[in-house]
Image (cartoon, rainbow, N blue to C red; front, side, top):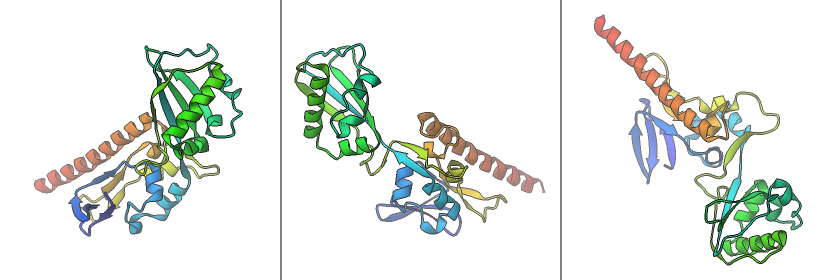
Length: 246
């Protein structure tokens, strides 16, 4: 979907592969980063309140690196956050590691976490560069020679154009209610029901006031929008029944 607009009769209009398609409603679930970076919504439909809310939230980056070795490896019992801090002498993205642990029963795969500008720096490097730095770091920290790496997988949420980050948060000094304003639908005022038709709805963790930055928030925001549409059609049905009685 390249653009979402509203037709004169209140239909949600989506530009898909250079063709416009009309729907009763559209539910926008893209990330906060995509909303901030792209003019997905027709600019004339974006109110000043929504623009302000977009500026008062930010999307951070949290990445994971999975490393599988040819043989099982052992980590020290104190291999935790404090252990990692002691190794921060590299002056590169390795200084941003916040966790390392074995993730499967065969003991041959590690998962490592990093966030913020460290994650963005890691994403900018090739897989070969990441592997070389990581193996050197682990061998230095563990003081042993590691088995051969057989596979390395990593997330790149910051560079992914469909995500542009991982979890939302409020910027310092933001006004209350930013998530609520992002959750408010774009309505068609000419609805026959007598209330605004929620033509373009919004869901996602960044629209949840209480549970932003969580999967729970994303799920509950979808439930919220489903209930919004159900309430609208329930009202429409009630008005139709009343008209039939009269």
